Image 1 (cartoon, one colour):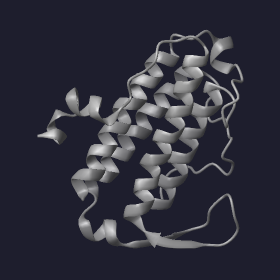
Image 2 (cartoon, one colour):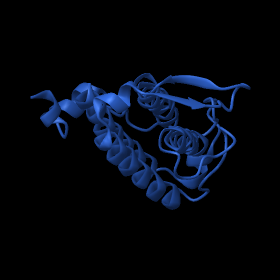
Image 3 (cartoon, rainbow, N blue to C red):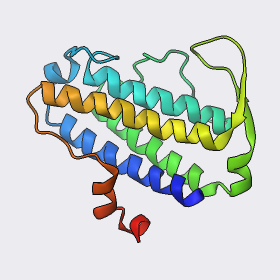
Image 4 (cartoon, one colour):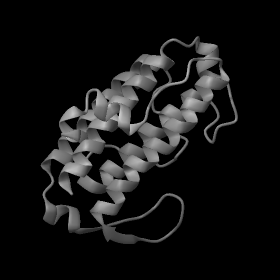
Length: 170
C-alpha cells in the first residue's frame, strides 16, 4: 500500500507542475477572472488546493501552518503561490516517504473546518482523500483553462505512468 501512496505523491507533484506551467501563460486578468468554479477563478482554485493540503498536512504531522478558511488566499502573487506549491508538494512526498504500514493503519483525530466536532479515522483513507481532492480541483482548474481558450491538459495518471512515473508502472 505504501507504494500506492508514494506513486500518488509523485503524480500529484507532476500534475501540479503541468497545471502551474499552463497557468503561468495566462494574463493576470485571465488568472483572476471568475469562471464559475467552486472557488471562482484559477487564482482562487490554486490557493484553495494549497490551503487544503496545508490543513491536511497539519492534521497528519502536527507541524506547519493550517489556514482556518477554505477560501483563504495564501499568496496573492502567482510567483509566490508557485514557490509555495512546489514546497508543499515536496513536503507531501517527504512525509509519505517517511510512512510505514503501521502508521498508515493508525488512527488520528481532527476537527473539520466544515462542521463542528472531532473525527477519528485511519490515516490511509484520509491520505487517499488528500490526493483525490487535488484531482477534483485540478479538474476544475482544467475547466477554467479551457474556458479561457487554452489547450486541454493531459493530467491522467496513465500519462504520468508513461512518462515521469515509469518506475511505478514497472
